[in-house]
Image 1: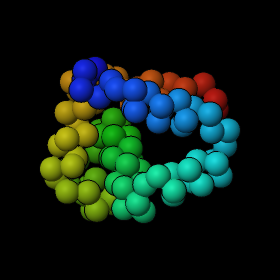
Image 2 (image 1 turned 90 degrees about the vertical axis):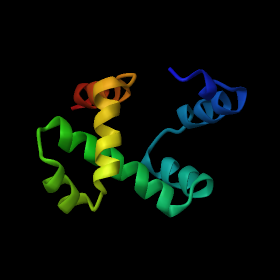
Image 3 (image 1 turned 135 degrees about the vertical axis):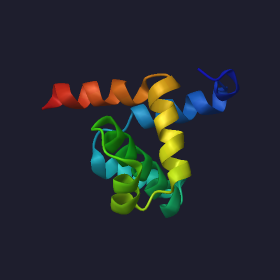
Length: 97
């Protein structure tokens, strides 16, 4: 994990996010903390990651999500060389089904 990211301020933000109980609370919090474009960018990256994991091509992903090839490449790099954050979330989501 990136040592530059580990600050008290980031810890406080993540602790705040972990207190949220449902989707509506997430909408309220994130709409206050982020711009609409920031939220949409995060959700786009998550969608791109799922599509990459499913084996879809960059072209298909770009056409469906509107993501640039640079964004798709960045997400792909995270999937291949990151901290397995996407896998952690997907495993929790799978357990909830």
